Structures are given as C-alpha cells and as structure tokens.
Image 1 (cartoon, rainbow over the protein chains, first blue to last red):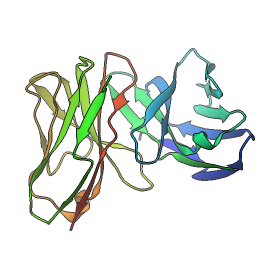
Image 2: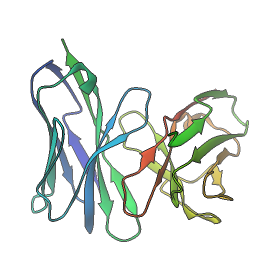
Image 3: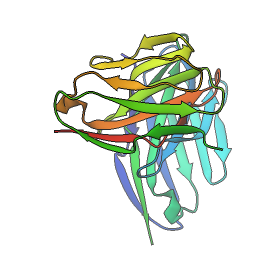
Image 4: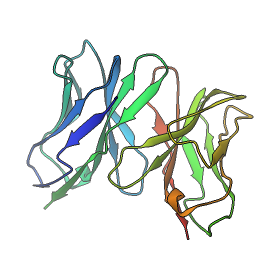
Length: 112
Length: 111
C-alpha cells in the first residue's frame, strides 16, 4: 500500500533555532517528492520538488533532502522565524496515473 | 494574480441539504482536483479532471459530484449532506508535471 508517514506530528522550537522534519514513504513506482507549507487557514504552498536523481534542493532557509534507497526525505529549516509556524506536508507522486500520496503533516510552532 | 479561488470560505449545512462549492483558476491549467482535509489525516482526493469535459473519481468520491464545462471552473456538488462530510475542502490546479496550486479552502460543517 502506498503510504507517506511524517514525524514528528508536532514540534515547538525557539525562534532562531534550526529543525528537521522527517518523511518516510512506501510509494512505488516513485516519480517525485514534494514538500508543501500550509499556513493556518490557507491552502498548501509548494516549497520544493525532487526527482529520483536529486539528493538535495534548497528554497531560501528550507533545504530538502532525498534518499531514494531508504525512501526517506527530510526538510531542514535554518534560523527559524515566527512566520515558519505552519504545517509541513510531504507528498509523493506515483509514476503513471498522476496519483499523489499525502502525509498527514508536521505542525511546527516557532515561539519567541 | 488570483490563482485558485474558492467560494464560499465557510458554510454550515443541515443534514440532507445540497450545495455547490465553487472553484475557479486563472492560470489556464488543464488539471484540477478536489481534496478534503480532516484532522490527523493527509489530504484525500475526491474527484479530479484532466481537462474540460473530462472528470474521474479519486479516493473518496461517494456523496460528491463534479463537472468541468470550462477550463477555468470545477465545481463540487454535495448531493445530500451528511455529518461525515464535515471537513475542509481544497481545490487545486496544475500544469503538466508541475506542483499543484491550492485555493484557501472551504470550511464546511454539517449539522
């Protein structure tokens, strides 16, 4: 069964600190992996997208990594800001058929 | 630059009522989809469309209908609302192979 699991479910960090969110997947055949940020009361917004051959992709203070062998991805946030408080969703696309498998998300709260 | 626009933002219905959630996009995207988001779960696909006149069922289609008469619009109809349909509904659109653009959602409560 195609599944995406994210950890932790929630996380609280102090402003200025770094953090790493995890995503494990059992999706096959794999096409690409995306990280989205969802602010409270808003729709998800794409942060990064990585294909099988890409190990890392950055978007400002966000850096995503992908290990296709172990089927794991991480999202690292550097020097966190209050505006980083949001839910971060890992999404894996299945090759053929345009199917997306969504993780339940990690809720991040950055406090001052 | 509107992107994906969903209306209404909030709605309360009684069991058995019907209603239509509206979704419009101005990016000329062929692919559009509807999801529901429930606490502790990932987004689940209800229906999707790969172009005007073409729709197909997703993971949780029961109780919902869609149509795609134009590229821009993709309304979602609840035929007879049930409390289990209380959720946040998101519409999304995308170009071929590109990340999806999501609307800001419709928060629906069924009493």
